[in-house]
Structure formats: C-alpha cells, structure tokens
Length: 271
Image 1 (cartoon, helix red, strand yellow):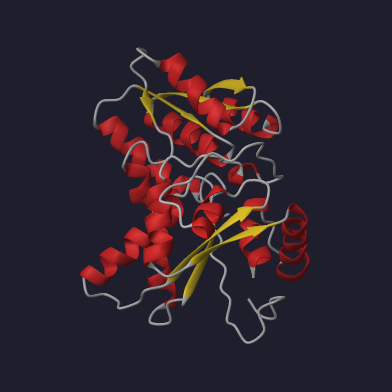
Image 2 (cartoon, rainbow, N blue to C red; image 1 turned 135 degrees about the vertical axis):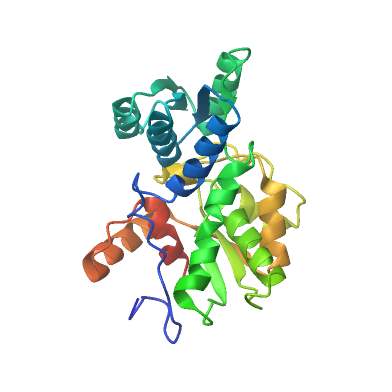
C-alpha cells in the first residue's frame, strides 16, 4: 500500500480477507471448526456473534448439513440477522452486548446437545485462523513484517497468528518474530487497558460502545492468551476513536478502492 497516511518511510501491507467465501476472515476458523464438529458427531451448533462469525457459522453449517443457532445483540445487527436466516440458521436477538448474547445462548442451549462454537471455547477455529500467519509468510516470503497490527475483539486471529509463527519457527521455515499489536476501540478496550496496567487478564469493560461491532467485546474469554501473544512478541496495544476509524474507512475506499468494515479499518487508524 503506497503513501499510507501516518506511515512515512514504512512499508505497509494489507491482508484483505474480504474475498473469503462468507466475506470475512471468520470463514477461516468456521470452515475448520464446523468440519471437525461434524466429524466428531455433532448435529447442532450455536454461538454468540456480533456479525461475521455468525454468518460464517450459518453458511458452513448449512453446507455440512448441521443445525445452527446464533445469539446476537438485537441492536445494530439487522443485516447480520438477515444473512444468517438466509443460510437457514436460527436467529435469537438478545438485549445487550455479545457477552449477554453468549450468556443467553449457553442458558438456552443447556441440555440441548448443541455444541458451542464461541471464540476459543473450542480448539478448532484457532487452527483455521492461524492460516493467516502461514499466508503472510507464503505471500511475503523472507520479508515477513516487523509488526502485525490486528483489530482485536475476541482475539482468535491474533492468538492464531502468534501460534502460526511459533510453529513455523519450530519447523525451521522462518526465524521471523513479528511483534503483535492489538487494536481496539476507545469505547471498548479491555486488552489495551490490561497491557497498560500490567494486569494478568482483562477485566470487563463497563458501558462498552463503538461503531465497530466486532470490537464490542467487553470481556474477551481468552484474554490471558491474547496478552501472552502481545507481550511475548514485544508488541503493544492501541485504542482508536470511532472518528479515526471512519476516516480510515474513507481512506481505504477513496485511495485504495477497498471497502473495509470498521474493524478492518481500525489498524490503519492505529498507525
């Protein structure tokens, strides 16, 4: 990406997963996780979602012949609800945040036999997400980035790429140790706060608010793993305003011809 605002003298590359089958990187994790769930005998799956994960779960469940139910915040997710229903999934709007949706889903599905597919509550979405790290090495060759700046809500992608580079080093395929930076919204930044305070885990963020639904995760379930990945790699955390996210979306659209979601534009806002 040439002439990136705020990045003079720095080479910036964009990992665009908008071409994934369901339009986002969430397809990576759900493709693996749903396939493995079917292999292990699951017949029904459920998950809370703020958007893209629910769409991916619905699509891959339909392809696998499994029932799917998604629990999601009722406000601001109307288009997601329509997409999930189009794939045949059951849709349950819940008042509150994705944390509330997760609690509601687990309560409703208790004893149903459905398997939960929430972020890092099962091991296989991580295995799909780590392919982003593999592809970075494959696509950029020996010039692996010094830093990877990642929009962080639940954190599966960041932890997955951290795992990928550990595996690649163990296999002798690279010596690269990219620094990982977690980007969050100023209105919901539990990871950034924990990094700043030197805390061992994230405490729930009170009154979370941001226009980026995928970053509206007030209490990441695997916060200890996220913090480990950032700290061990000598990275950091950055909180950005909603206004800067909107400005970054405009830059990506008008300068580079990329239609990015608020989450996808957040790393540019962090530069």
